[in-house]
Length: 246
Image 1 (cartoon, rainbow, N blue to C red):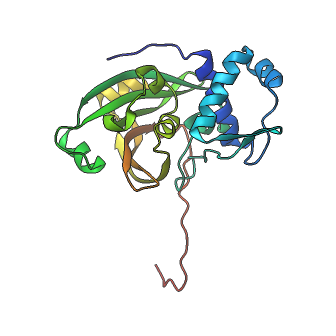
Image 2: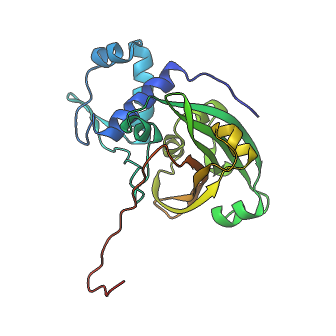
């Protein structure tokens, strides 16, 4: 099924607050500005603001202290360093561009053999697949295919899949705790060239990633294609005690 639904005001406010959590504008432990100030900042009603904040409270990003206010308890980490998970909206904004997103398609379908193996699924299980394109100043820079086991998304409606999938997994009780990723240089084929608006054969960075929750359950499989000249990605490497020469 395909979707061209415009993000709701609640979605836009929620994403705006997540961006501020990710980029440190609202650091861990800080108190959220009052409702009037935030409603004015995002140009929405206080009812819309409350609904957006409620989603972040349920996801565990914020907490309310009676008589004191609402505080930041969890912040998404930046993903341009490749030892962390991330908000691509914050990554694009940090690079000096205006971020955007286009949902290409959403569907529920039976998992294929590779997906069953990577997500540890039985033969009859289904996955929810979301295809999206991330934009920087209107230019496509990342195409992604994310697949989540359908059984993890009980109570999640199709419209919620237009927001952050990390937040969706939080709502479903499967907050991502760790991820493993594989990076492979590749060239754009005809379909990728069309989606990313580049010439066929343009160098791309392909990322395969599997996200796990705190219990070690595989909760999302992602395939991403990054336009190679859009960002500079950094791999952080750690030394170990008593390590010998490489």
